[in-house]
Each structure stands twice: as C-alpha cells, then as structure tokens.
Image (cartoon, rainbow, N blue to C red; front, side):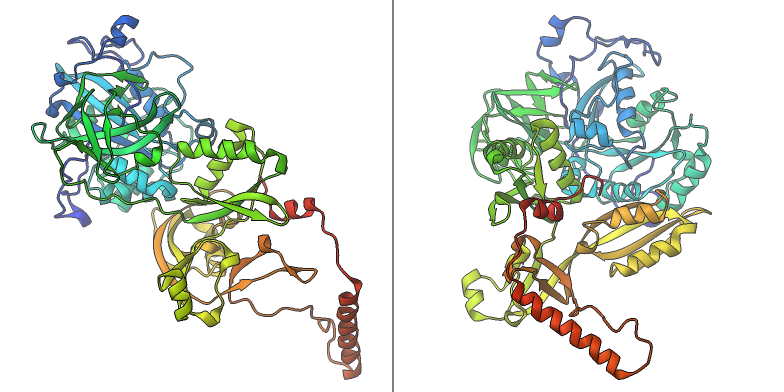
Length: 629
C-alpha cells in the first residue's frame, strides 16, 4: 500500500479524512454468514440464491463503519479497468460468472466502444475475509480530464484507489493525470499491474516506472491478469488491508454528498450519494444546500450493480436516493443534502460545471429540427454539464450553441445523439471561451462587468474597445518512445506551447510537459501527435487558467457579406496575398511590374463579376466535423 504519509515527496501530508465511498448501482442482499471463501471461478457462497430474497430490503445497520471500504479504480484507456471490475463483481458473488460479463458497469454503448467511463457507476460488494463480512463500495469513475470535477467529487467519497497499469504499455499520460487526482484527494493508492498474461508483458519494467514516476515501491505492486482472473483475489484482500475505513459520525445530523445523478422518466432524478454523517431513510425530508429546496425521500438503496432497496443508509455507506427531483440540475454534482430543520455545514469543494469547448449544432435537414430538439432535451436530462443556447444561421437555419467540458465530452455527446436517437447533425469546428478586459465605459455598463467571456467568435469585441485579451491554457502531458521526441517537440512549438518539463521514465520512454493554448489542441493536435509517433504517444491535459494573448477575429466574407459560421479567433494573423513574384529570381524589373499589374486587373475584374451562389451542401462540407478526425 502507498499513502501520502509515506516516504518521498509527499512526506508529512496527512491521510484524507473520510472520503466516503463509491456510488452503487444496485446490489444483492448481504451474504449469509459463512466461514468459507469462494475459490476463483466458483460460485460464491455468499451469493443470494432466490429472487424472493433478492427483493427483501437489506438491513445496512449490519455493516459497522470499520467493516466498510470505499474505493475506485483509475487507469489509462484500455488498461483493463472495466475487466478488473467484472472480476471483482464475480469473485464477490455480485454477478454470476458467465462469458457475457464484459464491461458490466459500462451501461452506455459509447462506453463499451471507446473503452471509457462517461457516467460514474457504483457497485456494493459483500465479501467475507478472515471471518468478517465486509461491505466494499466500488465507484467506477470517469478517468478523462474532461470529467475531472466529477472524478474529484467521486474520489472524495473514497479512501483509496486501485491504480491499474498495463504490463505491456506501462505508464501513459492518463495514468499520470489520474494518479495526481488521487494524490490531491490524499487517498491510499494500491498499484495493480494488469495483463501479465500478454506475450510481451514486462511487469518488472512497469514496476520500476511506477517507483520512479510516483515514488511507490515496486514491491507494493500487485501483478494480475484481470482477463484470466489470475491473482485478482489478492486485490480484494489488499482493499481491506491497505485502505482505511471511512471516518464518519452516524450520531451526527445527516450530511450526504451527491456525486452523480441519472434521470428516470417515471421516478425522476436518481441521486448517487455518499453519507459522511447521520442516517437517511424513506419518509425523511431532505434539503439541498445549493438550491435550498426541500424534498420527501421516496426510496433509498444500494447498487449491486442494479438497484436494491434498503431500509436505511448509514454514514460511511454509498447508495442512491430518490426524492421527487424533476430535473438533474436539482441534484448537482458536489451538492450536500441534509435533514429538514437540521442544517449542517455543506461539504467543501462544490462548484458549477464550467464549459471549456463550444460548438454550433444544427440538423442536416431543418425538417428534423423538432426531433433533434427532443433528443437534445432528453440527453441533457442525464448530463447537466452541457450548456444549451438557441442559435440560428442564415446558411444552416435554426440550431444551438452547446458548451462542453472538453473535446471528449463533445464527441461522446454527438455519438450518443447518433446511436441512441438516430440523429444526424452538423457540428461546427469547436472553439474555446476567450476573455476580454473592456476599456470602453459604455461596454462595461452594457455588460455590467469589466471582464467578459466570449463563447461565440462572431461576438468577439474589436481591439479598440479592449485593454487585453485572455485565452485559456492547459498543462499537457505527453508520454512517447524517445525516438519520436524531436518531431513531437517541433509539433508542440508550432502550436505555441511552452516546455515545462522533460523526464525519462525508463530507458526508452520520455514524459514531456508543455503549457498549451487550449485553442491549439482542440481540433487536430491529437491526430497529428498519433501520426508523428506511429500511434505510440499518449496525451492528456489539465486546466491551467488563462494567459494574455495577441488575438484577432478573422472574418470570412462571401459576396461582400460576413459569414458568421466561418468566423474564428486566431493568434496574430498577418495580411496575406498570393505572391505572384515567387518564381522571379532576379531579372528585369519590368517583368515583375507586369505580373503585379495583371494581379491587380484580376482583382478588379473579380469585383465586377457579381455574386456567387453557394449551395447549402458546400457549407455543410466546410463546417461539418469529419467522422475520421
């Protein structure tokens, strides 16, 4: 086990207080007492055997705080996080062992296809260890930086994490990002080296990488094959032995953290909650610290991974709560719930979602507008972090300007529209939110603030009215084989990035850290990086605030008229014209003058030709984000 109070560069930092554990999406009832632990691959003895038993409400008071462990699994994409979760569910008897158990906690098609977690899922696992019955709450959180706030709230419900690393690929960019999220939350970290069954697996090399980059002793790494089930049971034992129980107070008034929510059209919002203090049960009146609205609790329970009702939920436990909320905005991530007339200090860290990438969305055919509007409305019911503003275009008709947490979030939203609602859309090139410090008193009065945020390039204010422009920046992490380092450094410099750090994590692989303007990576940076490195480099980034920049709005005119859909904000673009003298190497000046006169005559003739009719298809081809990008 590794904790922040251990050796090395984290020395002296205290281990987190509670970090109440994971959300669950449905559990079977608690196991019958048994002294025999199931062997790997066999049917667990504590598995409920009848559907009647399954429907009985579980008495959660049977699990004292000292027998509860709340943990999460974090990993880079395709390093085996979901496969390990499947094996843990099987070993604890939560699900039957079948060949169909693949990515059980990944409910969405997009999650299964991309190998990522978009919505936090939870499962309460019952496990017998050395004669004691334990409640292990697994919170399967998103791992991508786009969802870093959701991850931070989920991790605050945990006391520890399993850091899964591929035995062949080793540490990747997202591994580093996820580790530091756990580090900042002061959680115990259990390193797990997965896929030791692969032909080219080198767990010893990966163990040395973990020790060098994270300062976790290599002998603390657990070597497993989640696919085959090899040594997976030792992971469960490590969770019990290395992760501390939550530090909570059941006699205090209720304090519950909302760390995710989903919408059910019949029951309303289902909030995933972690209890830090007190008890909650059906019939209680609870209040949202954020909205100050009061709700009657209709149902509480745990997830296993499906919903299983319980009589009550107690401090230290994780489960779901249904209280008549009609919209997911009423159950915001990070909010605190408490009992009516028993107010408490809200849990720290709450903030509203902050979109970092914006794009216009339009139906391919305007006759599909109402259908697309219905699809967007339904999808945003389960994703309150998407901001939606009505928009219209002369070329494309009615649509919306949507705000997303990042590029992956935008791509996932678009993919879900296509897969779940069969919607075909035009998604314009993404832009980032710029800021401008106004110098005009008239504008300051109009906007009621001196510093404004611009999410639509067409509304970018003129430089004569602005003191300075600010652009968002991110700290990017790139891990690559060292033979591609030179090319990647040139790519980063071309994107106005500033090098912050360079480190060899082993003999052949380098970790680079650069400060990027967000606008330079939102379109094709990742594709260029993969192309330069033959697919071997990995990339991740985190928000690093804003910096001053020399920015200008670039308008594109068609027939003398501004085309808003093509307006963009760029960095210090110079005036450009075709260089008709490029092929002239010395020679008589009269030839050069002749070429320049011919160019001027051509421009004059062009102005006389008249307007050019541009079909809508041409706009779609220019604006639509290609599926292979």
